[in-house]
Image (cartoon, rainbow, N blue to C red; front, side, top):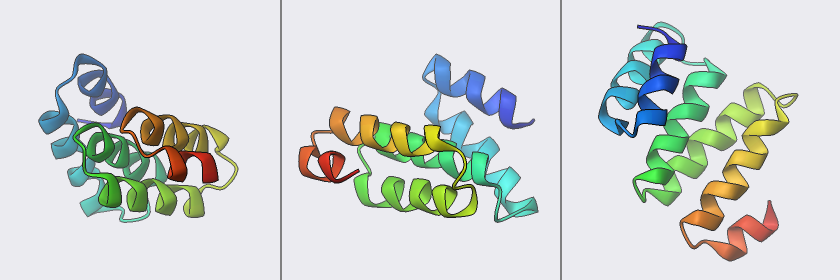
Length: 89
């Protein structure tokens, strides 16, 4: 399985399978920014605000040129009701 597979599972709402694939990818490369980003999205979607935010922030640190990570972080925080954190983004 690869990141594209993980994205498909995420789009289908299968957070457990998405997380499984992302964790496997991160075991091979702990600095895989796309996998960290997607795993953060999974955590935020599941209501795990602090871990999700930390994962996406790490992805942003590793790949600062990927502005979509920052946008996703803000949108997911808004959806989860963390308006002040989203506003800071």
